[in-house]
Image: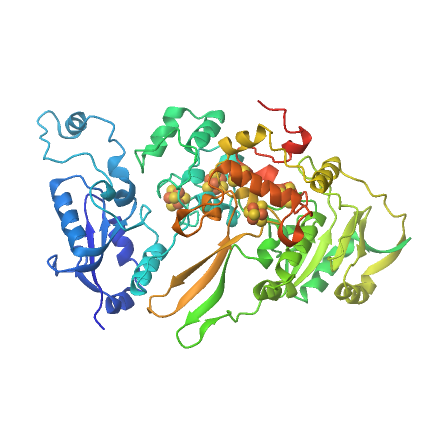
Length: 251
Length: 329
Ligand code: SF4
Ligand code: SF4
Ligand code: SF4
Ligand code: SF4
Ligand code: SF4
């Protein structure tokens, strides 16, 4: 049986998503048997982007001409293109300041002599190419990655939860930090799948998995403002992983 | 009327005796301070006067996520073969006992659910009377629910012990050395106004179609799902299947769902029976208070109050009855 060829690539990102893959230590031998990792610069010395791929997992936001070239190349050679992680799916941390002037930001980091290198505002993959599937998360969850890879072997794609983090948090009977402590938890508007990783250890959800499909953003903002948290503070928190919330969205 | 009496200071012995039949679970407080049903390590862990746990005991019968079928190419789909551990569920309040009675009718009625049956058979229910607070409105705290294998009613210096099942009769016989006779007048039944109103609403099939409250609910609801996760009679689940890395076997599982989620009414092709939140609230209302399917005309709500406690935006469907549906802007 020929093994499906995979590409795992990183654009503008921290490489944490690809690390999630390498962290699947128990499964790596099986994965190496099941797939041919044809293009995986971070994990493999063979860098062959010339052939065709069953699937490409692409980490990171698109923010440089090189990113765009890699992305388009992978898109045109892959049957399934998967946005891998929050940056690839939503823009992520790299995009949190997209509303500010790029020149001013460059100057604040590199000083007056700063030269912009042709980079542009970081954006998610689907701004540039058609994306077939996404695994969100900063970083993504191992089990969702493995479920996706397994599904590829079965010739399909998995169905991930479409409900918010609160469901997983309540199922685990964690303390609701929003209701019991008045904290600005973003659980109600954030895509589940992490099994309420943060509230389970009494840390409010920061929204690292991006918006849940039917987020009632307007009501979440009203409710938290009634608890005395300013709109500016809330928007600053929400922008951290996704800069383009529709603050008026109710469904 | 002569009743079996268990003195306060014999409770420990009762618990020891019960533990011989299975793992003792009851209301306890987690490290974070949440009141939940969980394993009881010591008598002191047990919360005898707890109002309500976050999740009702339905989690023992229908876990939040449960593998329902395994698939292999050779055998096709087969039921998972694990056995359910024997659990003594102590301190189940009357509303939750009623909730279990409702789930029994749903899952063990015309087409019994074999996994539910497995878990249900492994559970011994020990009920406990409680004091209502401003959130709950069940009327059964003075009645002894018939599905309790043992029911403990708080009285001065101890508990009255009774049973509604044949399993319980055997248990009471075994407990004889701990029990004494107490002559006590039966308590008068009291009716709760909200529950009376709810029954009336169910009987007349009232739906308050013109109430402005519907829009108010739909605008605020976060679709967080807490109201159904925490409801003792919400049993909706979604069914999903994941293939394994071996490329041939698969697991099919079910997980709790909520009719306030968009995906609950969605079918192939993206069509949705209840595309907006307002319609979803009508649906929830219909099920909770008027009943549907084989249980039409019977409210599912047992008045535990959980949905009123856990909603982060304070949505309370019972406002429809109390305010007649026209009290809000
Ligand atoms: S702590 Fe956050 S995630 Fe958990 S239930 Fe409360 S709001 Fe939802
Ligand atoms: S709880 Fe929130 S911040 Fe934490 S991992 Fe999950 S989505 Fe991310
Ligand atoms: S609808 Fe609310 S009050 Fe009624 S049984 Fe469910 S959680 Fe309890
Ligand atoms: S339809 Fe709604 S109210 Fe009825 S059991 Fe399902 S989630 Fe609960
Ligand atoms: S608990 Fe409240 S906000 Fe959450 S789904 Fe139910 S009604 Fe909506």
